[in-house]
Image (cartoon, rainbow, N blue to C red):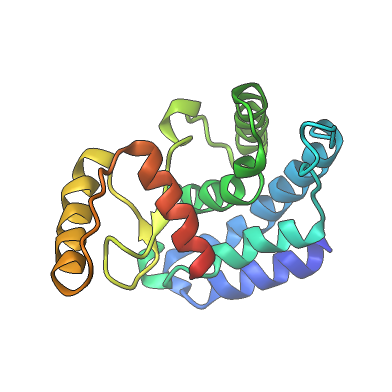
Length: 187
């Protein structure tokens, strides 16, 4: 399983020889597998959390999500790790229903990121990182901060309202996170 996922990610990253990011394929897969194994052991289904069921398909969704990016946008290790974190959070963390579980998952991810990828980031620096294709037009890229993204979304809403029935929306951080989740699923 690890070998297949590593080969897929490494093959994808190998397409851009100049980046040198292919050396991170194996550590990313190792961290992903460890997160998956820890998640299925620590976040067990209960009557109130019956949707806490994870399987190998979820692990493949992380890798599949990473393959949505255009290689020319993948310029350095930090960007690659942000992409991996975003996909990991979308597949696993978004299912967690309370802040205690999400904080535990953040801590878990942080530990594996430090041990496998030598990244000493603080959790606050990456827990709200988002990728999407609605800021740049069609490319799957890291989205700007909320305060920079809101005017762009307001502009898109105005364009929509000109051609369709009126929608009055207010964009804020949680709304943008949900929009990113829906956009990722539809993509």
